[in-house]
Length: 392
Image (tube, rainbow, N blue to C red):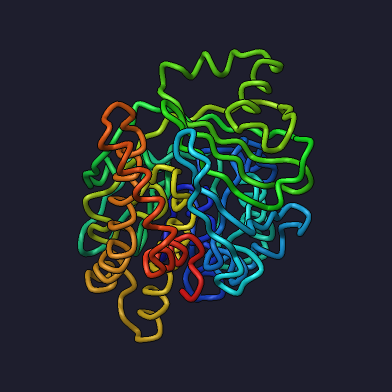
């Protein structure tokens, strides 16, 4: 069997890339090891995604944004970053960028559902579920994948979107730098007495980090970052003790806080592929760049990256050239590297700085950075541009 593009992985990056290639003459196959039912009805996983304006625009262009109920979209009007026990905070306000919000919070499972919906209506896209990739072959002449059902699929281009721990990336021989932070992020939802005012908080305490992100009504998404050896301790707290702990950590800004549902743990490992492309092969999403969530860039960067690759492919189609030529793939690699590498390094630098709880110099630097960010407008504007992706 022959396809123009084979996408390995039907997560947000893979599905959005496939949708970006809809309405072209390309025959696209998505290979996914999960079931069709799990794609159609993804389970709630505790993660709420902070979407930039660019991400909303891209989701709208591929028809996914209208599939998300407006009641499930929470605007972020302000963002405050606090350090330690200090009441001083770095402040971002949507009014400074003349938009209705800095960004928007949407549950990860709803984004996945929206990306899957109406996929059957896209005539040039096929989906093979409950199927794994056993091997990948790629050279200058073509590429092929051998599937767990015994089929061999030939392709002009193979694209891997199978997570930051991509098996396909390894099969093709592309190396990646990995950084294990020795941390875990625990996410959940809580309801509270007082209104959050659509303000997002990032509280860099000493020993752990607490993010409180505004959802609809008097509910917030809670993101706790802590050393891995404290994971079970936090997960095993009784609901009453957990509620009291988070309320205390947040200085009772929202009054009494009450856990809703489960607590979900995720290990924190950042990944950056040394190369995003090979012969007739490309990486997108977390398979290319897997970010630490502290700056909320991961999903947005993945969405931007797939759009870059799709744009390069569409340009090649218009010019009548090979969609998987070295020139096309190298252009994608260069553009996405310029967009992602500074962010990746900066994010890891922030994590190192705000995890250094022992050295006095690090504590002073943390406080200095917040004040510089608040009081030097070009610096603040640059940060806001990255947070919101307005104008991209």
